Length: 316
Image (cartoon, rainbow, N blue to C red; front, side):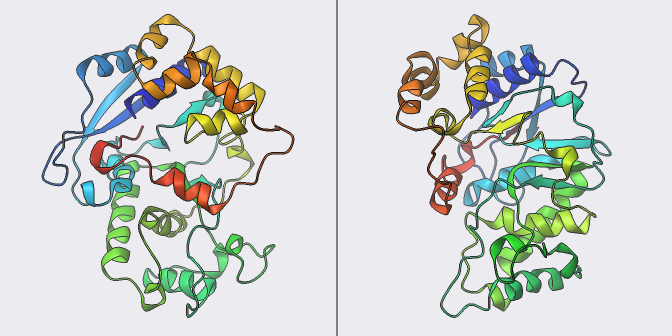
């Protein structure tokens, strides 16, 4: 993931000339919950810093190896207080000038590039409404205002559900505190409506809409349309970028990775070396009709969530 961070940092520097914020690369540290040292080598840190990144060490206090997806929750604790934040998964490519993004950060939101992965329909389950409402009731939140009434009852899109590939808001430590506390509570004291539901790996995305709603947040509006659009691409895996990405996205990837000062690092990662520099990405692309792509389904989303293991996951 350190190489994904390098790619993200290089694309930000190349394509966002008006960006005046700080790019933090959150790095988990070894500890009681992370028995394998997940920190990056010094030379990689130096390369990231040359691209303008600030390395932000943090310790896992709650999840660690037992739930590596919790890294993104715990990383927010190390962020500065009282500042607007946009949290990105490391496998994100900046396509345009993200410095032009103007939105109300006091109303948090997150990515809608999700599929109906949770809750899962079961034979004896109580249904979507009862499952979600039990969680809103647990934390004293109004359930009805979160519903998308343009969607039919008991259809997954009717309910507030996000993909945690990007999350924006104000005051990252305060956001993290509630996200962590509620995720732990759901994990350890789930309502009876959830007894048939798996929470691994979906725990972060189960708690996320509750936290966003509690801070007055909502689904992304037009001011956030550039994320997962003209400003950023959460590619998940490079073969998926080559298979599904537009010609413009592929061009940005290859333009950003062509300078020698970036190439010398990214070629050390075998997946990048094969897909970008040895041309295998274009062989993948040639297998798909860009005007008739297969649909994105739940198995695709599930597979993308299970890469990596333990505390070696790093998020930027």
